[in-house]
Image 1 (cartoon, rainbow, N blue to C red):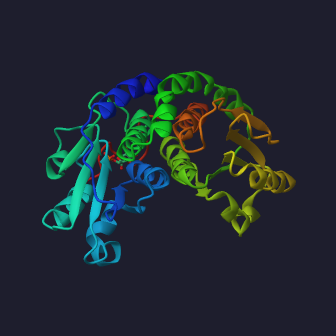
Image 2: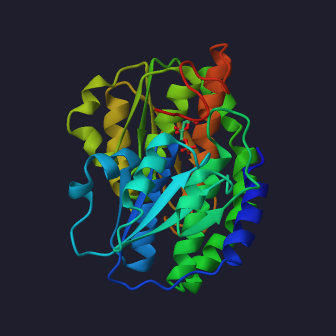
Amino acid sequence: MSQGNASEKTYQIVSNMNIPKENIEVNYLFTGCGTSYYIAISAARYFQEITGIQANAVPASEIFLHEKQVFTPHKRYRVVSISRSGTTSEIITALKAIKHRENISTLAVTCNSDAEMAQLADDQISLDHISEKSVVMTQSFTNMLYAIQLYAARFAENTEALKELKQVPKLLNENVSHAHVMKDIVQGAKAERFIFLGAGIYNGLAKEGTLKLKEMTQTECESYSNLEFRHGPISIVDEETVVVLFSTTKMSEIDHTLLHDIKNNGGKTIVIGDLATDLTADHVINIGSNLSDEARATLYIPYFQLLAYYQSIKLGLNPDQPRNLNQVVKI
Ligand code: F1P
């Protein structure tokens, strides 16, 4: 509930940071584990869109297990390591594995600047005002992604993007309040399985939508890039399938057909999108902003977080303490 207010502080922190100027020849590699890896996926897309610099995302374990497949010799890299705790085993091992490579510089994004990850990295974005008691990451997801968006816009000196991102804290507060609409939606839905669809920057969000539900409710669920869903997975849709689709202005025509197909197969649909997208679904949630598809992404987050929360309450579970999971995963 407090992620909107927290994002005001995030805005101030990144606005006051010294942003080092890197050569355009540098490749950006975003990395993390679990929720933080899903931030990496969305962050890489946003970074490349705004800066024009090649940006990819890999799970932290890939860096030390498949180093040769991840880094091309003689290229320069900036590795952006993301971790709420700053102590997750794979992220620490990954940073140690690349520490002495001259062609790699590192930037840590964390909610714990005292932890080992920040000490290992060359630079850091520290969001120490984010402190979560829950095992499940919520406002840390939103704020670390928002911090990277701000960093990218400042790095690119893109005043248009910065102007848009400045509006996020206020809009996020409004959407957090509105997201309680999920309570009624969840109560009225007979749902055996959930599917989350999102493309581009929204693909990482779709993956995170499944992770929230898995953690908070142990429900099996899946995520796809919107059109990939038609290549096989659509055959599992039935009356007890709920499809949550993150729509964007760019995708609205495609999404229109997709929603129609899901409906025809008996599935329930929830579409989260922008005022400009005129889509038909069982539930249409309008984000209500005039921001670009890329700048608007964080506003979608409270909806799927609260979807998982209310589903967990409905099933009589404790949303803060998933089965088989601790706040920090250590090997
Ligand atoms: C990431 C992570 C989360 C998971 C749980 C345990 O940790 O694995 O993805 O939901 O909260 O931690 P971190 O590296 O961001 O601290």
